Image 1 (cartoon, rainbow, N blue to C red):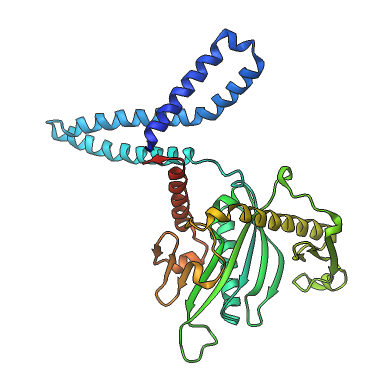
Image 2 (cartoon, one colour; image 1 turned 90 degrees about the horizontal axis):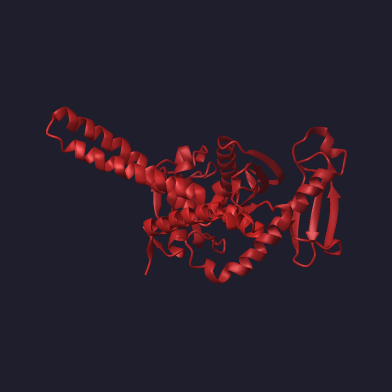
Length: 362
C-alpha cells in the first residue's frame, strides 16, 4: 500500500520533534556519538519540517479565506476571493517545493559537466545542426550563469561540427542538463537543398558530470598513451608554433580524448584527463544500471536515430520531447537557448518517477 506524500511528511515532522526532544535530554548530552548523529539528523530534517509547518499555516489561511468568501457582505466576499487566489498560489508553490525535497538527492547535481555533440545521420546538415545545438546550449548555460569552454572540435565542411566537446562549469550544471543526453532529430529544408525538400538529420548529445576528487577513477599510467600535437582550432599563430594539444588513449578500452583549447599543454593534459575519467565513470555506471535503465523514459537509448529523445521540426516551428510526450510550438525561442520550460517539465517528470520509486502517492 502506497504512503501518501502528506503521510510521509507527517512522519518526518513527528521524527523531527522526537529528535529535538532527544537532543534536549540530559542523558543524550553525555553520549557524544549519539549526540552527533542526532544533530546531523536534526539538521537534515529541519528544512522539511519548517516547510511542512508553512504548509499547515497556509492550509489554515485557505480555510479562513473560504469562510470569508461565504460571508453575507459583498465586500467581504470579494476580499475572500482575492485572498483565496493568493493563498492557493502560495500553497501550490510550497507543495511542489516539498515534493522536490522528498526526492532522494542526486549527489552529482551540483557538478560541472562535459557536453559532447556529434553529428550523426544526415551528413553536412547534421554537422550544421550540431553547431545549432552547441549555440542553444551555450546560450542556455550563459543564462544560468555557467561558463562554456571548448575543449576539442572537428568542424564540418559546410559549417557546424562533426564533433565538439565543451566543459560547462557552474554549480548545478548537471541538474539542469542531465536529461539532454540522447539522439536529437531535426526536420528542415537544408540551405543546400535546391528542391526545397525537408530532410531529417540527427545528432547525439552526451552530458557527463565532472568527477569530484573523492570519487575519481584511479588510472594506471601504463594503460595510457599520451600524444601531443599542434592544435588545428582557433587561436592565432601560437597554435601553429607549439605542440600544446593533447590526445590521451586509454589502451584497455580504446577510449580516446583530446583537448586543444588551452595554450598550455599542462592545462590541456589536465582537461583531457578529467574528460577521460568522466567517460570511464559514465561507462561503468551504464553497465551497472543497464538492467533497469531500459524501462526508464528519461534514460538514453542506444543513440540510434529511431531512439530519438527529441525532434526539432522547423517547418511547423515545434519541438517534441518524446520521453514525456511534450510538444512546444516555440522552436525559435528554444533554439535561442530558452530551455527553462523543457528542463522544468523533464525535472518534474523525473521527480514523479522518483516519488513513485519511493512508494509515495500524490
